[in-house]
Image 1 (cartoon, one colour):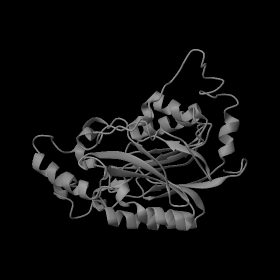
Image 2 (tube, one colour):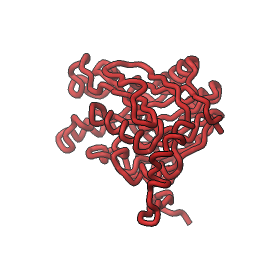
Image 3 (tube, helix red, strand yellow):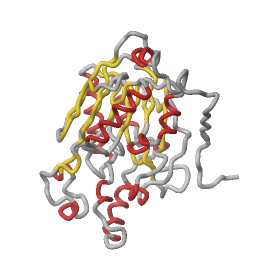
Image 4 (spheres, one colour):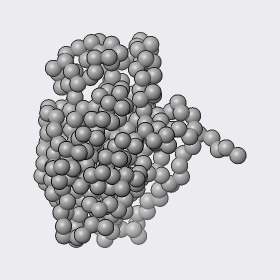
Length: 317
């Protein structure tokens, strides 16, 4: 457990992946973990679906008219998705173990136990011993994302004790859902990680609101990407990303303190790593005036029930 009153450096990585290339993205991820750890970071966060890349192409394809191209891209995506049971994340786990750091990373998860055809938008928390502490699947894929990912469940809607504090988080627009947020606040989250593809003033305001609402540190982790950050072998890259210099996502990563004040970022239209010193004890102290799951929560009036069963498509007898 972390020492109360002691700060720990955290890092928010805003670098693009090598889209649709799992192994190359893992190599880049290992390098970035080593770089952040060398700078003193004890918790390192990566963006939403970073491995092997957020499906930005979805917002550019016509579901019917581009059916063949969509199929070609999805085939490559499935082949490069992460099967945790098969050990596809082991290079990043080994890097966390070598550096003795905690790592949060967004992945396209391929379920190696059931259909193998369904993908999930998942965030994985890796401990400093390289073990997987938690796996949370996005509850509701947003709009066209439902063409890529299945629905998640609440089995990973958890806060984990780590050497840097109690860590939990939600993915992208899950952060607009009050009840999942409350479930993390009720577990005493101190460092709240929000990997996303969202950006801009509304998103940044949301990160500040969550920090003030939950009296916790918030790591809003975006992913800045230009056209030229997409590999040349991406199917019909010129059609989907015609301007190589355009920022298709500016990033806008931030780190916010438990009072809602931005202490690092926003990192806009730039690749880099944000750093900040975070004292988990500051979260406990800030709840003296507002604890939405405690003395401010009115449990005599309100009650939240979370069903934590793992959703499975079939039960084998």
